[in-house]
Image (cartoon, rainbow, N blue to C red):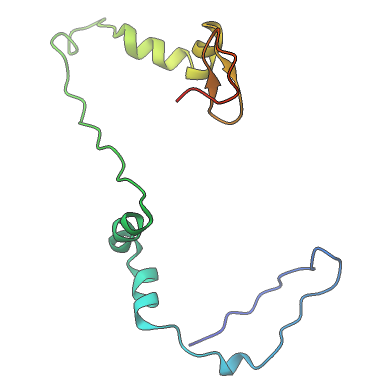
Length: 115
């Protein structure tokens, strides 16, 4: 197994990093670990399942509605979604931001965010 060399900079305390030991004595990675790294997309669902991470929702492909092919046809929902972001709509309607991607409902005085 080849060891890649690179300049890793300075330690946050200001000193230089130092390699201790013999890099040639580092054992080869187990075959299963190498297989995971080489075939990550195949292993990810299994690992996510073991960690309790749910599978992402599958979104159905967009099927054109009647009239979408007509000239000057407009989709007001799509236009609204492109012109407004969710956080702006929530705040315009009285929701208060409480951290990253979390909001508290209007007239609620609880400390936990809406789900």
